[in-house]
Length: 442
Image (cartoon, rainbow, N blue to C red; front, side, top):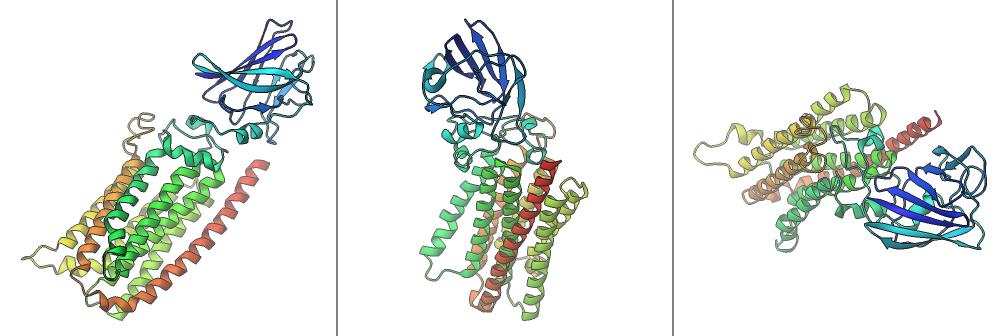
């Protein structure tokens, strides 16, 4: 499938076939004294539902002006423009693009006019009209930083508008399932737990609302990351840091919620545990974030991330230790069963995430559905569902008024978390900008 453009010129007609996969643009002359083939690469080309007015610029002359040899087509909106040689072309007047349709693909007639020449650049084409169909590219067409291991196709092109990536939530590509497997669980958590807690409880319980807030931040940060990170390398860094920040906040909220529902908890234990929770959570967050930006190709960083993530996943279970060691053999602790199920799904999610299963066994087969990160998302949903059930059950058995003294400490911890996350993201984004600029000048 391709988009076709016909240029009607004084000495003949030019047909332009543009492949849907954003490959080269082919100009071929027919019924003209000189036949030539011209190729150029553009970031995007609008579909045939838009009216534009402009000829295409080359390095020194508009296409159609006589040039014996050495004529080059140039993408004039970038300094590292792609140039390719063309042969002599016949003189043409200025022209306007007016879409029509024919056959299986759009057909656009380019007719002569008397207006002064303007320049048709890749940027003007992009901003004039967003593609109506999502153009997908292969893994070789995106930077190494944006590639998924063993995922070969289904990538969205870079440097489109934000609206383009937001609209891709309703198009098929290799991130769309990741987006919905966090957004739909968020809708479920809201309908099942958050809405009843806010509107049907006589007094909303802050212990539960902290947990629900952490889960909501986790889902929103991750879903928006999967939707918008493909825009550029810098956008990828920014949104991955947002994702890491959502995981950090989620870990803190789970730990605080469990601490606040712990029976017979002393002030000393509360202080020591909360301090260690912040330390372990930020150790995981900072090691993951700084190594991702500054040492992305350093192989040991994956092992470090695995160890810190494991510690961060286990630490919120410390307030539950007494229930595991001293539970009654006569009665079943239903809440503890939910907590244990959450840990099981968390460990299982790490296997899918870390080992890239099943796509490692068949690269290119699971590009759109059922690759490891998508299965990881489903496991995370099971984690959050079990956490909510456990907290809901525990809240019905514990006198929550005894933990009201923790409210101020919890709020100050989460407020400090917002400030620390903001400073970290700003610092690392600036570092990423410097690294990207350095590579451009090499």
